Image (spheres, rainbow, N blue to C red):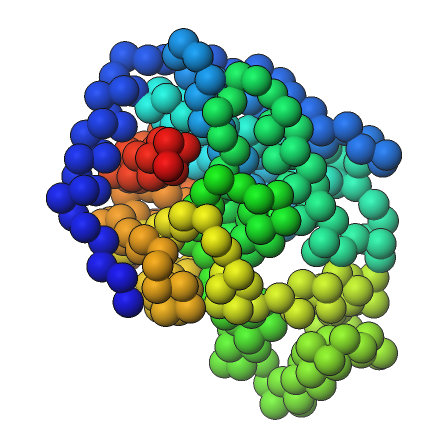
Length: 320
């Protein structure tokens, strides 16, 4: 397993902070045009002369928008990340996935959605950015579920570098199985296992108990089949670009063991554990009350070493 050279990393961090000092970035709308409609995003640009590196930021699961917010959640984690990167000299694009927020019109019917839809969009974004002369290189940042999408898109789009933040190492079905085991009564647990096994085998599962319909309804099963076939710890082995794995030490949703699994699969990657950072990239204690506040209040700043770490990595990768 590769050990990060702390002296080199401290040098990169210092450079990132110095470059970004006082360099307020600007934001403007940007869109990916597709046959089904526009996928809407925000371009964050540093105030810097000449071409700059740009990163595509891919949000997490469910109805999470480009800023990292969703129903009942407002933390602005990805907006703050993008703005911090701009201040450190790195441009970025973050976007609403199909069917979400300003990209709602581009969303297919639930039964027609596939995991590959998100991969294809992220790959198309990279091609669009690569053709833009304002950018010296194009990298990918995948957050949470976006980590797996980002891995696959980084390979397909030949990204200069790839960053995973709070990403899983195990497949989604394995994680779901583990989460459901302690909460389902035995009859429903058996049904859940039957359904999961079918979906993992690439088969639709037929009748679903009403108690499990929110998870396994017929219209979502094709998407789950397309998602379950990818295991991040296997996918990451195919990456040939520089890779940074970022994990918060107080992340209650994705434990450090997931990042370590990814690191074992790709020992050449850099693994950085951000002290005190939770899943929404904020400094937070391990207690539930302290965590909850950071999920719903954007006034909480990002963990202080997060942006310098990522910016330094991307700036170095853009020059290698």
